[in-house]
Figure 1: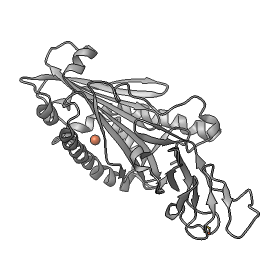
Figure 2 (figure 1 turned 90 degrees about the horizontal axis):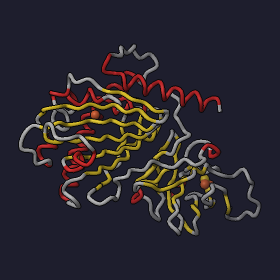
Figure 3 (figure 1 turned 180 degrees about the vertical axis):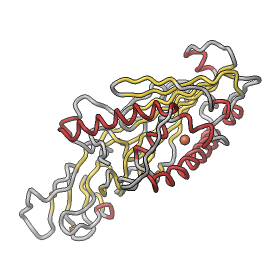
Figure 4 (figure 1 turned 120 degrees about the vertical axis):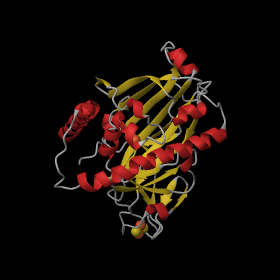
Length: 341
Ligand code: FES
Ligand SMILES: [Fe+2]
């Protein structure tokens, strides 16, 4: 399936990039990521145009990356600027260079047509760094499923009661219908589960004495960002933002980037309004999130093995798939637009 390239795509956590080159497969291409001396992130094609040696095994000096094989050097724009033992440098001797920017503690690259960048920026989150909110970044993981399969999963709260019964799910949500709304750049799927028992994570951190009204808001910023707003207030408390911010609330932010046609990188961070600055709680939550992802990964890998195939059986979409249906339509429109560019 054609990968959508005209979008800021997370390629690394900011703290992954330093003076050593980092090799990573992105959009089916071998890329190398590093920083120049002033800290600017750089994303270059990692296959040397001389004899295809991997540039991520090379060294960085004077803001250039040197090939480990015969020492050709490339600048941050991807141009070859030095050939040991040869004066003339052919202009065609270059590697791809993707524009890079940092936001939310992540490095973002633009793998598509630079002319399409315009005023676009990577997404922002008002709570990131705001007083009363604590965040932690997660360990980057590779999901063994195509990006569309994972986006599909993130537009599908109906699965949480079943796949995540031991972590974030609650059986009492299973039959509650979903509201779906859409803008040209986003899809939001949400529901309130009223008069409910706090689910395991809320019981641990939320200090609730009785039942709660809890919400799940699955927000997708097309084509590659998911923000899940998840929280609870005591049953029948007012639902304004200030009240919701006073009780248990988390924002789970995920940036999805294709590694190749059948796997994708998952860059994520979590913001919370409780246990301010408590690193132990962050560590516990990190482990709980990894356990939740493992529940998805196990299923998605099996589904990829079936659906990633040319002769995949037909699906039968149901009433619970309204978010998925809109998502697929929106992604198909973006693919068509890129094809016509
Ligand atoms: S393969 Fe890179 S310099 Fe020869
Ligand atoms: Fe899930």
